[in-house]
Every structure is written in structure tokens, then in C-alpha cells.
Image (cartoon, one colour):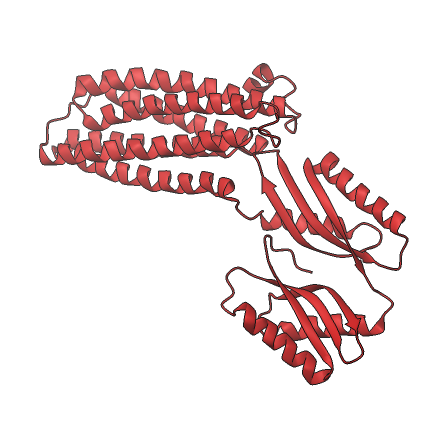
Length: 392
């Protein structure tokens, strides 16, 4: 069903890397959400009014909010598709994250309102009429929401949209909540035990918990969340596959919306090689990442002395010794500057954010081990923070 609708309404649907196609997917999903939730709202508000069930009525209002969320998603995709301008040179892709955040907040608000109404129903219980109309509407709602969950999840994965993934999660919540309402109504009808209010409280707690998780997931990329380990590893392996590349470090990835990522990285190459040839390799790396991965990459060239045996020996030895402090510590850009009275060993040390050992301790440790083996050698250490888990 989903594939048929996509082929029917999304032009050039296979080219999901294209921002226009991506926007078309988002708009189509928004329209489907508005129509389906409007139908469910009308059916449930009628069933809830006739039966006197606060749970069914609250579920109807939940569908109305879902329709509003779909409107927000629709506008979010439309705004995110706007091209870059002088004031926003990186584009407007983060509008999509904002729309996803608003959807998540709507979910939490509905959870709070449902909780309040349910507590009121517990304190002042009323008889709930159970009819075939109510049961039919709820069963239809469960089936439709189940389809919407798979629909939005599939499209969300296709275009890597946090907004649609949040919408899919909301549809899953609706399946759970409506199923709970149906079970509670049936139990109350056949046993005489009024569970409408209690079931509403349980449903509300579930909705608020899910909403909190969605808020966190949509805020993370706007706050500058570290790139996924899979992406970091893929970038590293691809860079190391180029001829002449000896190592890579200091990767930074900035997310300005789905399909709008910018990155910078340091690439180590032999200082003795031809500079023009090395620069040509760097140009190819930047060009290939943009063409094949849609990633705007800026590469910084670090020349590494490969024929100086002392530099190579120190680099290997210090790399091994520094791990005695913490196995995650790495060094790079090591060089030596010889003087008449002493020699400086200069390098950068990458430190994880959660490491308890302080910068002074790291520098002191490095100075002591080098001085012990090479009495006239002094270390000059620059502490780097890891913005992505990119091992040397």
C-alpha cells in the first residue's frame, strides 16, 4: 500500500538524495496524516460523546492534535526546503528539526491533559456505555494507526527524517492507547468495574514518557550531537583508502539539517612527497565526499616526516606509553625541534570528554616519561578534545 501511494504521488521517488524529492515525501506524509487523523477525530468524538467515555473523547482530542502535528510537519518540510541565502548560508534544514520538536511537545501536552482528565474520572467515576459503534470505531482506529506507523517509519528511514520517525512513534503510541481504551471499555461492560479513568492514567503516563524521549531525540542534533560511530568509521576508512594518506584525525561534523552536513578533518601525508600531488589527493577527497556522500568536506593537510627515524621512534613509543593513562588517548602531529641545549618534542594529545584525568596530569606524565628516556628532551603538548570518536 505504501509503495503504491509513493509511486502514485511522489515524483522521481527513487532519488531520495534530492532535496526536492525529500520535500515531496515530507509533504505527502503530512497530507496523509491530516486526512487520516481528521477522520479518526470525527469518528471518536461521536463515539465518545454517545458513550460518555472520557478515554475515548481524550483519544479523539489526541487525533486532533496529531492532525495539527501533521500540519506542522508539512510546513516544516516546506520551510526546510528553502535554498540558502545571505543570512542563512547553510540553508534552512533545521526547520525540520524544529517541526519534529513541536510534534514531540504536542505529544507531551496531550499526555498531561489526558492525565488530568483521567484523574478527574477516577475521583468522580461515571458509567461508560459500551456499544458496537464505539468498539467498531476503536478497532478501525487501531488498524489505521498501525498502518500509519509503518507508513511514516518507512518514509522516515527512506529520507532519514527525525520528524517522520517521531510521527511514526506517535502512531505507535496511539495504537497502544486506543487498544488500552478498548480493553478497559470491554472489561467495564462485562464486569461492571469502571476502569476508564485508571486506564486513562496509564495511557497518559506512557504518552508523556514517549514524548520526553522524542523531545530529547529532536533536540540532540540542534545542540551539536556527535556523529554516529558508523558514519565516523566510514569516513575514516574512506579517507585512509586514498594513496599517500598515512593517518587522519580531528574530524568535526556539523549538522544543518538532513542532507546538509559540513565537515572538516586533518589528513596526514608524507612531508617528503610532492606537495602538488598531495594537494591533488586532498582535492579528490573533498570532491568525492560531496559527490558520493553529500558531505561538504574541508581537509587540512598535515605533513608528517616519514624518513626521520628518531621522529618515527618517538611517535610510536609515546603513542604506546600515553595509553597507560587511558587506552583512549591518542597523539598526532609529532615533530622535534632541536636546540643547542635541549630538544623540544611537540605533539597534540586527543582527550575524551569524559576522562577524569586532568590536562596538567597528562602533560606531566608525558614530560616525565620523555625526560626519563631522553634527559635533554622537553615535551610541548597541546590538548585536543575529541569531537568524534575517530581513532588514529
